[in-house]
Length: 421
Image (cartoon, rainbow, N blue to C red; front, side, top):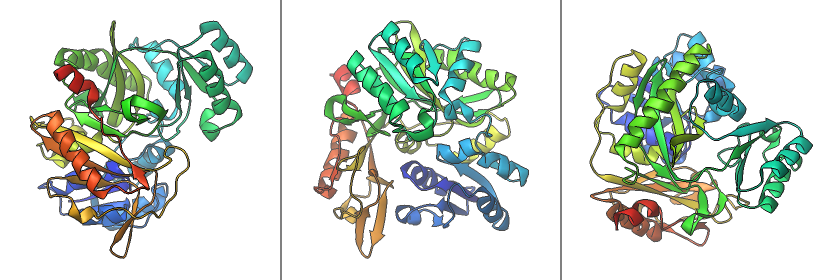
């Protein structure tokens, strides 16, 4: 069959790369794709939000399966349009995608079905939110209710940071309409990890866990980003904890969505934290995580497309994982996640060794040169016998292509490496 990947970032590059390896796949299309994805997919110049044009393309080219990468088209209802056209698509409907599109929807669902998460309140009135802040104090977490490209979360350790954060979200409208409602959550302490699962109704197929690093700078300092790197496995999170999370979080969430009349099909991403009282939910996403996908899929030894088709058919897929560790590190434009320049020349990407998996996120080809074209420019993943070996290899790869226009964190995986010393 032919497969269509909707999107054009690093996550979608990894999805296309993995799909292209499938014995079931003749051709991979990516819409809109990117210059960097052209090596594994035929790029189609259709915007990810142009649902009718995408559905027409899929019908015309007899695409057997469509996978949607980014959250915006899912929350916008792309799956409903594809389903109405009789097309095979793996992703949640518009109502089911609310689990990411509205943090207050997700919180209400968790409260109703006793899914462990932090205490919270949601506000649309600035003064009421401010009064509540004064009542609960810091540390506290503030979240723009809607989609904010992974940047609408402020972890405030002081009241000054909390008040400033509330103003940024609700008054300054830094996250536009996403911040018209704010969710204020209890601050949880513990080790974070990402647990993604392939879901179809009440069927839940967990994938290998990963841990990403959201802060921009070394030592988990600086502003939150869409993710500066990730690694898998996560040795400091015991398998018993993962099993507990699947039992107490993923299964009740999938069942709760069915009960609410918005059955979830697709990738359910649970951002979790291991507290003294067990794993709890920080956030849900309705799609593959970025950059976690770029370290989880390289460890998957099964046929990715066969696994997805099995889940769509409510069969139990055969999932096999490499024992090797994967570390992926983002090369980002200087200034990210704030203002940054585009069109800066990168080092020679062709100089990277064959073992380095290169996933393009925000690059553009100009003649023989690769230029920056986004905040997160690219990600390099390495597989190694252990996390340290893999990370050392990635850092060396990135040093060879780094310029003054970009930066990367050298300490991805430091939580695990502290534990393993």
